[in-house]
Image 1: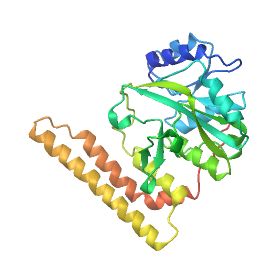
Image 2: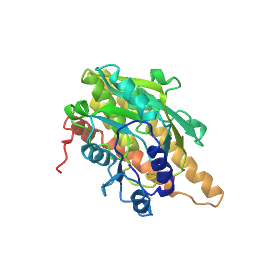
Image 3: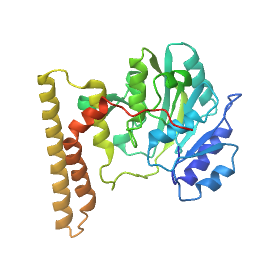
Length: 296
């Protein structure tokens, strides 16, 4: 899936032409790019799928449904896979019929230190995702480097379309496991993941970073006792307080510096507050997930 990263996408598509796997197709989901992405795509033997909606789960679902193979491999538009990347993913996936999904090694290049382990992680309190230093212990893998069985993907209903900008692969992996399948890691299947510095969500009202986390937690780990609910809500209040403290401090700091850069902290605080106010709605949504099939 790609959006306005034409130069980076060209590097990725070039590397995909050099894979040594004998038989594969390349599908590019173009998420309403406004740069020369279409021109770049036209230079390579790939199938292009348009996804104008701002919904990453919908775009990935459309890409899967447009595919012909039983094994679906994911690679982001800021990645360069090794020539044997697909061979290693497929070999690991076929080594055990109970394995539904395989994640590979992501070599992050140019990322800030706090994103050193981007591409894999562990579940933390209230659904907060934490880095997984040891990939063998990761609870989930990112779409920058993964492969899964199409038949099992279809059997669990595909992506949850509520996750329009994040958490879609985390939710998918957990549902594979809940359906009785395994996920695995293959170190030999490697991609280089390059930092672009592009963020599409920073100034969006109601951005779902917090919203998706709470929905994910309530969908899979909802408290079953009064004590559990009290602990959940207490922690959300604690995290909200931290968000508000950061936002207010940022506004005060930039004001004293006469920079007046208030927009980012104001939107962050607004999103943090509204996400917690939406908890009853999110609980209802978690018990009534969207239909995942798409009309062709």
